[in-house]
Image (cartoon, rainbow, N blue to C red; front, side):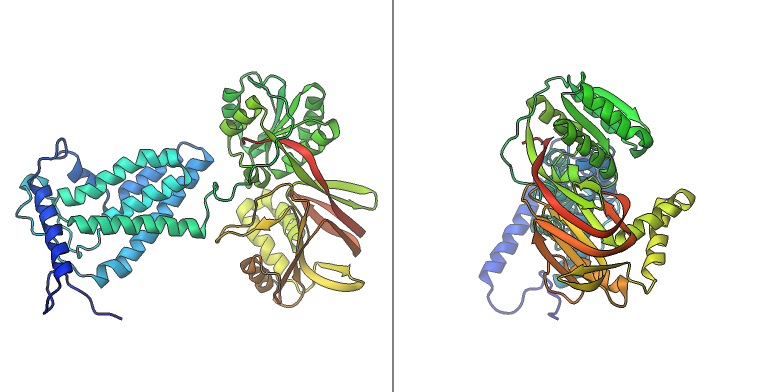
Length: 494
């Protein structure tokens, strides 16, 4: 560890560059103290105090999130995460490695002084770091909200010089550290814009300027009424049909008979049902995310009614792959994933308890009950020999890991199935966790992966559960999985 450095105590010897920089810093501080800042006296001291302990930024995050758009909520969370990293770095490294005394308040008019003077060291400015980190974090996710927050962040940073508690270099260093923290968070958890799919050849889809000819079926159980209303504001002539979960399939079939384009709002299971109807009737599909995870819609970069409305008005659409499975006369499709093994067991166990104790507690209970068993939930024949597996995952197109985020697809028409397995053995929870951490590693004691266009599984016991897009069905004997390349036309803002 290097000893603490006090910039106010000059070491013996000549340090011309350092002395010049410190003299310039002091001169800038004195100039700021002497200058009359119009309209600053009633605002900046109060603003500076409101940012103590991040109170101002937590309030700002709540205000941003209150707009109830997915991007705004992500921006608020990213801003707070960036602020937290900046504060942690300042308090553990910054303040302790350079122990600089606070400026002398004599040049600063008394009206500007804070009622309570800070007692920590001066370099770097924690307030400036927090302000810059929050503003940069918000802007990286939502430039619009970043433009709103940036003037407030700049004012907080400048208030630290105005009130005489920091030198200008303290503020500059703190702001630079805050911006660096925001970019570090973005590297760990990429923004939605970084992982959106690249443009694909445009598909033919009808342009519906006011939404006339679009029939949207919304699952009331998904709690998506706000998003449906937002879409109706964008497309006032679109027909909206809200129904209970048990009525979704029937309403989709009715809608397909009178629609030029079929719309759906709900979770991944509801979207799967709509895709089946759209394929059968040769209709383009408009997907409005309305569930919990919304994998398919988000991989399309459709987040809300505004983006979807623009795509429908302009006829912007692409063609995407559809996964397909078949077993003993039974067929189904999947837009996201298909899996066998522990995950279908977890889904069934969760659904068994969810109506009694709630969704989240049911998930925890299901995991405990399924993972503590010593029996492998799945045994399949691969290459002529039997293999015990804890999990077999098949993705419709390749999933990529970026940072700490879950896998996302950057291409929804690559013609590939992303097959991953977690091998059988002792300690299933540890094996599943190791496989999740390993991510894209293709060689691991617990995890393996391969990309194919067709998969054949044999030797499945009667009643083996298979999950696809959140739905669960029983299979037995032989299951084949393949692709329908570029089979479905979906609206997507290009």
